[in-house]
Length: 93
Ligand SMILES: [Zn+2]
Image 1 (cartoon, rainbow, N blue to C red):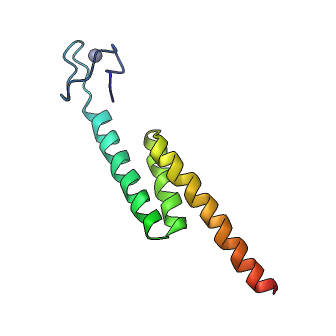
Image 2: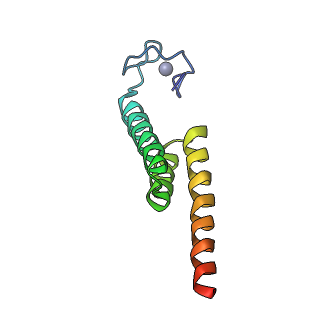
């Protein structure tokens, strides 16, 4: 979060907006959760766990949009499709 969603004041790492007094704690909690899920998705990608990586990236995106989580999700989707295609090709052989 770069700005207070209520008054657009610049965010100063405090859970209460210095200008309008809005309680930003719930948003900060969601952001932290989304960041944690995003990192977890990247770790799962590194481990080749495409299905779990996609699910985790989707959970992160449901909380907050981030380009990294979106990239992780589409990468995992592509890899899932590719591995499914390989599996089917082997079955049909
Ligand atoms: Zn504010």
